Length: 495
Ligand code: ADP
Image (cartoon, rainbow, N blue to C red):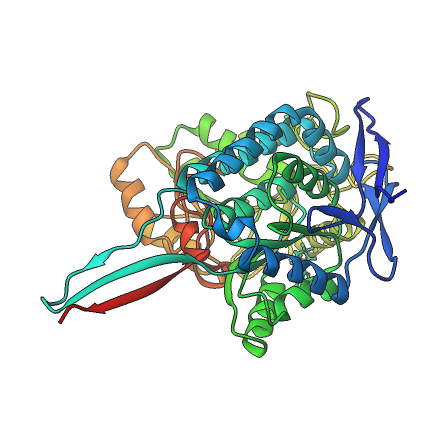
């Protein structure tokens, strides 16, 4: 009998399900070629959940082979665009049916609060539906040049796309990548993050159940330096999309340059400013500042980790923010009331606490938090540093945890200069009742997203991505379709 490479798992909230643990290649779950596996940890308890098969170079080759065949000669290559759309709609419906199990897996594997995981799955489903709608609306143009020629363009898929995703929003990142790639007719080899492989494998089983032809989507678990690097270097992958740290983003660009000049889109780190003007609705602004930094335990590339408050309301905001941060429920990720669960891994947990030490050594004032919560699991108290100066590392470097730096500013010119004094440029927000201030700030801040009187307002229909070292290309919206298509120009001589 063929091995099934599934394992029965019981999640602490009582959900029981079949977890695929194999690599998903050509619509089958298979063992890695050398049989290697790695352990998956529950960050809320530090205990083992299971082991999954680990992809190395030879497994990446097999996945690329399957994706190449599917792109060049399988039923996918001949499928009408509206039928690709129908498959994506069907996948979204199936994900909706499986929402309780998908969100439970996400919480079990990442440590994030179940309420947030449910929201993640909802956003992942909406993303797939959004791109399903695009599948049959991607057109070329007719270009008029002269009476003697007829010219048109075709917007064609690129081919096999490598997609490397991080651990903070495994399902959303999966769908942001796979949605536009499939809508435009590409095939995919997606690598999940080694910290969080489980929901991607479960989603792979739904992709098979939906009826996508073999080889269209291949999902592998594995480590960045081995399987991730093999994707970035692969001569038969013609596009790589990556979300993760800026340092790895650089290595992916280098790997693309050194191999086949594959197209690269990168969604990288940030140190995003969240700005409160004197005239803001302070209560609401503090709510968004709290959400901006502590949502998902601060493990958000767009996190509002630099909070700038205008002089007239600084003391009031600092006091209100302290009070609000202390109201966040931190703890058991499966409790519906929890807002902040565990950090994803021991490495991240230790890194964040190191930054807390750095902030104290640099002379910033901790107004709340600053330590581990409890003795088991990777929980950290929501931490706020006040009186932070521009030269401090906690003001410059991405911490990727529940740690916020607050500083004062004088006026619009002052805060725009501070907001832009960063190597990054992913997101930003301003809180003000004055439309002119909002528009002026939105114009002058160098970042891919500016939010007004809200934070983390990411939406699948609105382009999202970075200026500067926060990356290139845009995900979400119509713009993401460009990442996965190339233009062919055809000129016909009519004479
Ligand atoms: P973090 O440091 O927060 O874990 P990374 O940028 O290292 O973030 O990881 C994001 C994704 O990039 C993960 O899927 C990881 O496996 C992958 N990755 C890490 N290093 C490399 C690499 N050298 N080449 C390709 N992918 C990598």
